[in-house]
Amino acid sequence: MEMGLGDLEIKPWGDRTDLLADPVAKMLARLVGADNVGVTQIDPEVSDTTAFCERYGTRPDQAANCIVLEAKRGDRTWFAACVVLAHTQADVNGLVRRTLDARHVSFAPMEQAVSITGMEYGAITPVGLPQDWVILVDKRVVDTPHIILGSGLRTSKLALPGSFLASLLNVQVVEGLAKERTSSG
Image (cartoon, rainbow, N blue to C red; front, side):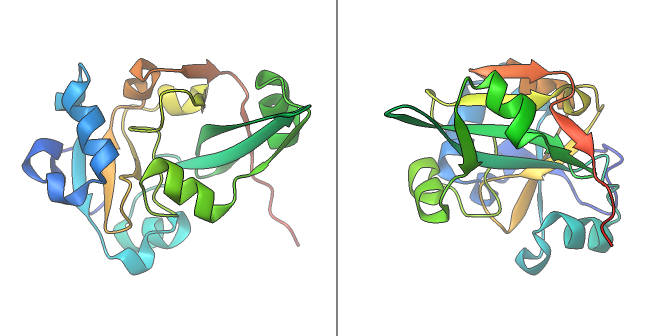
């Protein structure tokens, strides 16, 4: 599968289910359009986005990050996810918080995120998240012809059309969900 995502050997996901977390493989098996999804094995030492892009020649505007959040309003607490391109940063305390109608939003505790999703920390992906979660996807992700993002395991990545994410259950595509990163200095 050629997707122009750098120096990656991308295979159809169904040929390498061993490279997918169980919830991811189960979800892909049920989704229309999943035949456009590929998977690639990577060195888990460079699973984090910046190191991954440098090692495999994938541009940051082709790499997406899934951020797991814990939202609160009154006595209610729930989990949600945001998907943004690597060269951007989710507007967590602004548009994300307002879109989720939460009083407070923070990064979900690692142990809870791993336990609830059945995926490895640093590799959590929107594909296969619990059905009651809201998944917010920045419109730039959906507009990107092909993206690379977590597979649920740190030893691999999914490769797929950005528009595929819009077909997932509970996805809201949000214009301006992320802002360009600024260098700090």
